[in-house]
Image 1 (cartoon, rainbow, N blue to C red):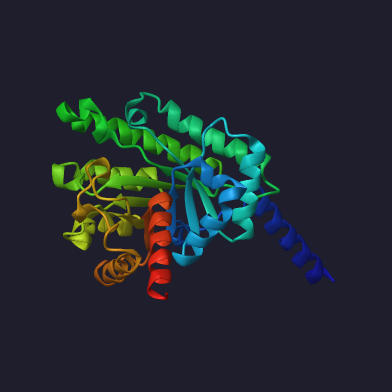
Image 2: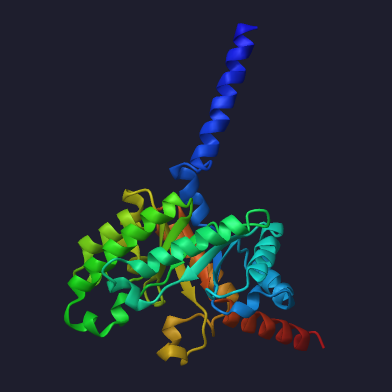
Amino acid sequence: MAGGRKAVVFLALCILICCVGGCQNDRKDVEVKVCKTSIFSWEEEYMLPDAEEEVQKAMEMLDCEAIYQQVPADTDMDVIKDYLRRRRKAGQDVYYLAGDSKWAVQKSGESMLAAVDTVGRWNEEAEADGEFCGIVWDVEPYLLERWDTDPVTVMAQFVQNAAKAYEAAEKRNLLVILCIPNFYDSMGLEQSLEKLIRTGCDAVAVMNYDKTDEAGQIWGEAEIAEKYGKGIIHITEMQRPGTHDLEPKNTYYEDGIEAVKESWEHLREEIPNENLGFSWHYLKPVLELLELDTFQEKGENT
C-alpha cells in the first residue's frame, strides 16, 4: 500500500509540474515541430470558410502541416476561433505572421512585444477551439533607408528586439520562427547573424530566393542553427517573375510544383542538418499554379 501511495503522489506531482509549466516541449520536440513543411498566407480572405476548400486542397497537395497566416489586429475573434478550429480539425499548425521593417529599430521593441501579447490573448480566448502555436517574424531591417549608411547599428538593435520578443514569446508558450535573407553573413554581419539565431528564435527561415546555388547560399545559416540546436527552414519563392522585381532565377513560378520538390530533395542531400524544413511563399500564387495545372490536365484529357 505504501508503494501504491508513493506512485499516486509521484503521478500527481508530475501532473502539477506539467500544468504549471504549460507542458512545454523539450528542445528536440521544438526543433522538429518548427520545421514542418509550411506555407505563407498573406491574405486574410483565406481565413474565411468560403476559402476553406482551396486552402485545404493546397495544404494536402503540397504536404503542408503548418501555415503562417497574417491576421489583422482588428479581426473579429469569432473569425479567428473559426479558422483555428478548422486548422485544428485538419491537424495543421497555425503561426501568426507579422512584421514591419520599422520594428527592427524601435528602441524598446514595443511592436514585436505587443504582437506577442496579442497572440497570447487570442490563445487564451480561443483555447477550446485551437491556438496559434507560434509567431513568424517578417521583419526586414535592410529595407530601411538607414540600413544603407549604418547596417551594423540597425542590425544590433534588431538583434536586441528579437531577443526581447523571443523571451516574451517563451513565457507565453509560443514558438518563434524568424525570417531572414540569405546575405547577412556575406556582408560582414556574421556575429550579429549568429547572435540573432542564438537568442531570437526557435528556427530561422531563410528567404533563399536565388536558384543559382541554393545549398551554398544557406550553408552558413545552417551551421549556426545546428550549433545552437535551432531549426532551419528554406523558403521557396513562387510569385510570378516581374512581381516585386523578381527575375526567373528568383522564383519557381515558371518551373512548377514538381521542380520545387526536386530542389528540396537536393537540399536534403546537401544540407546535413537533421532539422531542415521547407516553406512555400506563398498561398495565393501557389493556388494560381495549382489551378493552372488542373486546367492543363483537363486540356490534355480532352
